[in-house]
Length: 318
Image 1 (cartoon, one colour):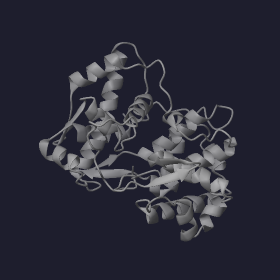
Image 2 (cartoon, rainbow, N blue to C red):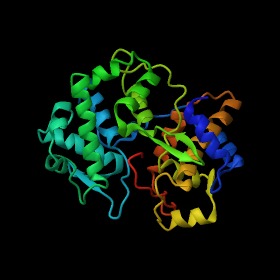
Image 3 (cartoon, rainbow, N blue to C red):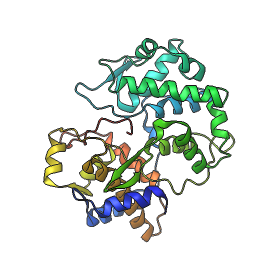
């Protein structure tokens, strides 16, 4: 068992505020359609298919480096080609808008030297994006490592892993501190690696084996513990909270990053997906954790009036 599953299992087994419903998992698994499980990026309302493979690869890096914590009141939104976007789609829109305006945001040499004002112009929206300074620092740090160690080319970084997805994951975490995603629970270290896993999976699913895809050792990857998957799991009746935690979430009370409740939500999210995968496997249906993850995330993009809030934690982890 890998370190993510092993350490989050300890949290799940000892969870005080978050619970999973076995009957809910069975019910969902019976109705789960695994005949077509699209990659989450296939749901993007903004197309970037016109980009070269090299630019697509760099877009995935720039996006995943700073794709976190979009919630707020008002929510950060971006206008692009006459439409408004928020969340992940807004982040993609800022990258494409920058390219349209002649700003070489996909060039690591440009990002490494980019001023705060330049970055603010690229990220402009109706309000300042949450954690702006953290995003700026991460963008510069990631670019600087590429320039110093990989000739400014993310393709060199990816190819140095020799098509091994697990090696690529570990290399991301070792080279870029922003992808380090761990917590502590009852004195034990817990591993999540949400954004690092997502970047590797995005690369694998975006490209074919003759370019940057065809990565091996992805079977050990888990769900990406964020704030949208728990919302979907709660809506499905799979995840439930103690009254105290439910009241906090429903009243938009922020949960501190690394708090017991937040760590339990994230760990239980990973194990909800593992349990769904296990239930499907009982009937000979082989589905990856990532496939279930993407299905739940895309489900969360369909809003309804009776949706309960997602938990709010201000963090660069997700």
